[in-house]
Amino acid sequence: MAYIQDSTESFMINLEGEGFGTIDGIEVINLTTAIDYIWEEGVWDTGMPIAFPGDSISVHARATNNGVLTDTIYVEFVSTEVTPTEPTIQTTVLPPGGGTSIGTWTFTMPSTDINITINAGHEE
Image (cartoon, rainbow, N blue to C red):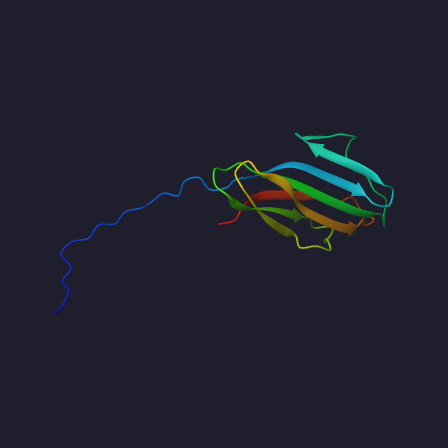
C-alpha cells in the first residue's frame, strides 16, 4: 500500500503573550567609598556615579516581566572598558508583573572613564 498526497494546506500560528523584560532600577555601589548611586525612572538620585582608579565597584540591575506569560528574563552587562567577575548575562524566571534584582556585577575601576550599558529582555 502507498500513500498518495492529493492536497496540502500550510498555516502559521502566531505566538502571543511572551515575557517582556524591562529595566526598572540600577544601583551602583562604590565599595571603596561606600557611596550608593541609584537610577530609577531615568534619573540618578545623587548624580552620575563617580570612582577613583582602583576602587571596587558593584552594579546591580532590577528588571520586571511586563509580558503576559511567565518567562525567563535576562539582564546583560556590556562594557568595552571593564570585564566583571560575574557572567555578563544573568537570568531568572519571572511571572507577569514580577520584578526582582537579577544581575550583580563587580569590577575594579580602571584609570579611565568607562561606559556601561545594561540590557534586559526575555529568552526565546
